[in-house]
Image 1 (tube, rainbow, N blue to C red):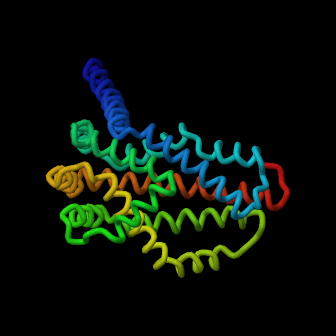
Image 2 (cartoon, rainbow, N blue to C red; image 1 turned 45 degrees about the vertical axis):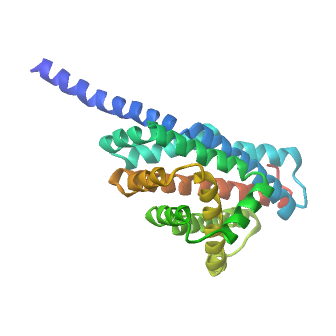
Image 3 (cartoon, helix red, strand yellow; image 1 turned 90 degrees about the vertical axis):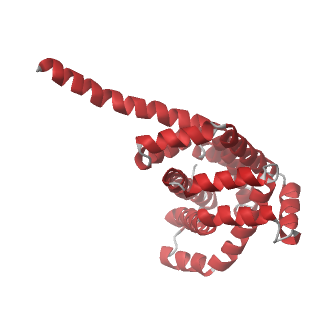
Length: 266
């Protein structure tokens, strides 16, 4: 009896360990460390824009260090891993690993990361947006990118996340400077149409650039994966983890700004 109990206890212990190994493997296949480094670079660039727009270039290196601390790569990785651990079953982890470790999966992740890095150059981003605005809406790649965006609900999800992040940024500022959070949310929601248009332009420009090297068949295979329960679970986990992460990041960024404006120590 003791031996059976010991075997059962080992099985209960081994299953989570196996799941953790699968999770680590999926994070590696999705090149999440590189994604996080890209997000950190974007965060540092956003910090410089905030210094110009909100602080009249005040804050100096102390504010820069605060931004770097807020975009903590270990914490960011843990936030994403936590949501994936909560949202994906063991079988979904297995199927996601198969897709993202495949040649196509690796190609897609690499192309998306490369396009994201390229967009750090404003000139390249503007060229991509001009190409989208003047491009052929009847082309097959445009139709496939539209299908991919719709299947993954990318526009509405990104708009919601953007409004939530902005809300938390100003809520962080209000924590020291004062202000009505309800009025703030109403103001942001009144801008939803313009945010949606900006998001749509960015998504099409980004994906048309990223997926241009792919064949139509490869894009269709990516869409087919997105339609599966596993693809939907991965997409949901990504949005949930990024939403949680950016709500906290932008709240703390708002606090950092308010501390400079109020003359407090960071």
